[in-house]
Length: 321
Image (cartoon, rainbow, N blue to C red; front, side, top):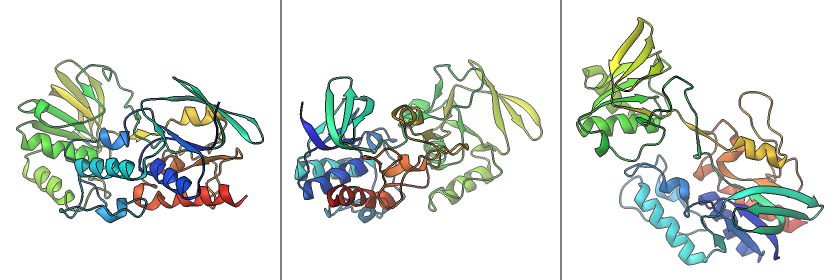
């Protein structure tokens, strides 16, 4: 069994950034990714546009050339594929890590659904896009309820209810409406989220104001049935006709996996993992976190542009010892 200097769990942009730093320091490393390269970006909606500009998504000092002011999903996939072509990463795709256990002072055992590995250090850079935050309402298990949104065509000319007021919800509502869907939004708060992309927020607010998209603020779904949805509003309970529910209520890291490994989480609802902000090392020596997973349930705190630095922090610390 090869004894690696570093195993990186997750082949997203931050995992790739960690690999780049490992290559610079001539470390024997391996990335293990459960899906395709930059799998989370692959699963984004087809026509999603990033909030960040292209240069803020760059890794490895490789320019991200983009004609539009903001890159989209397809351009990002092209960029990160080219990053792999350039650096020729040591990476195993479509292999899921199921267990990480520290055996002694300088040895982790990493178990996957295909193999076992040994490494002196481990970085977890698994992001947060894998587990939807559920509404826990009756009928949520029906096939018409979707927690991921890909494109609008399927919903054209149908009664579509979109849950939430964040970027993914707003994008889906606007795209479905423009493709001919009858769109209703159910929003827990009294306004569209302030973190919605600044060039999109006026669009959704104007569509709601003119009545093109119906929105129920300070409201919640109470039950989903085959052909209708029941909503609790400030004016009382109502029932509307419905064909699809896009429950885009957000996503969370695999916190159970972190706890199984032995990483301590905060005792409040944020479930923030314990780590040293100067080195990114967790309460387990030699085990590091990078990227969005560092924020626990605060999935808006870390993103590509402000967590790229984690890669250099981790590898510099490993190689300084």
